[in-house]
Image (cartoon, rainbow, N blue to C red; front, side):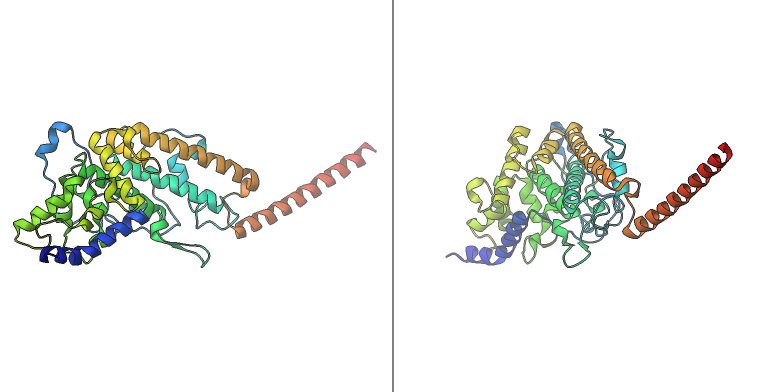
Length: 359
């Protein structure tokens, strides 16, 4: 076996495993504390793409933050006006978080755990939709991240709304970047952040330079990069392991996450939303290609309808006590019982007085 091939298998094996693991998990670990705003992942018209040279060496640490608390929730990106009920606006939903619904609400005081998970998932997808359409690329950090209430109720970052949003948006943006639809270097760094390149000689700049040449050409581009530096990392041939990280086609893949990435890239390259992969990323893929606000608006409409349905059920069950903690509800019910008792006594006293006057 040639010296170059031996070196690349040893040096890049950890990076390939990291990429495979992240693709299987569908998650992107974040890179530090939050920064306000962030680079905008705005698509450019066809006649402008060749004139843009993204700064692949820029430092994006801190942009893709890990959020944590579940007690409050920032308003979701996107000013969508449709609401199925008064409580169904995005603003109202985020305002009610931690009081009416959410993991930090006491069991039995709001939505069920299953209902909470569904609302979190839909909200996560809505924020991700805004990101892939060119919104604040750090917006996923506004959603709740890790949660630990008890041993029975513990959520890691990867399973959190923030983690899911980051995973979905980063994968779609990476495919868009590779296909040339998005010229934002942050779109590539978002996907390759943190431990995706851990223990590898590949820098984010090298990886993104390769991706910018198109997913099917990435490994050949990497070979030329190292060849130009007289670096024998790749040698004269491209090792098969490289195609696991940067697949050219479906047959290069060994897992569903990798195959999904190929489908995303092919849809982006063809600028055809009909070719987007079925599943949770289909709408985000379509939004990234068409930049049509109707895609994200349709997601908000479904979120609103679902939330209004669950809210109505909870309100029917809890009445005016909806949104109260167990202690608050107990105190409120006790106060209501005293008031009802006092009102009954007043009515009985009035009735007795009337009867006496009639005599």
